[in-house]
Length: 317
View: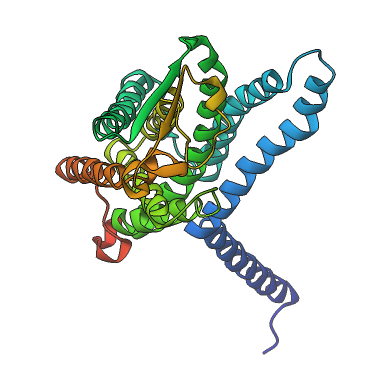
């Protein structure tokens, strides 16, 4: 029996719809695959920030009668809200959720906690180095206002870094592979990122990696970015204040109210890389990491990898 032509058309249409539905479903799974979200999220946040700075802000500010430092501070000062806004709206649309990691009401408390949580250990390291004869203040100018430039630049740079490392890489990896693997992956990449820094060595890379572990654990504890951002900012600014290199870089030493030097065994003093390269700093950061991750476990904030979760909870975000 020959089927009516209308039935053939309907069957063909159903097959087309089913085929298109299958293709759309596959594309949706690819777009929402964790690695895809990491790559696309990082690329969009970086490209938007770099494009606005290079194509708009730099040419405009280049026409104004201001110094290079002032122009750089203004550009980065504008880049900070830009990258935060890009991250917020991108992932609000991409992941169809509220971007709770940037909830403003938690900024004062967690920002202060993160900042003081960084300044205190760096100050302790400097005290120990001073008592052991490895840190010496040569002179002091008392010009604290000179710290405004590194304050702006450091804050903006580390905020962008934290959006990429903790907001995108760590958050998405943790949601899929669990906290332990996310810590290992992001901490390793964060440490390796410092390999090319001047005067870098094994201890400095391990120290940077342990810092990545600590900031990842801080994110896990609160599931927000404010703690890691302000910890990273306080960590770098404290080193500038004490007149030491920051991760092997000396570009901000001219703005420090103190002129100081590190001497003695490099493993203890940190040498030309700065106090981050000291085994004292490494040990202290690992102790802080152990304390923060313990708190995260105690509060039930540590996530298991997807293959160890109940079936109803196995899908990430």
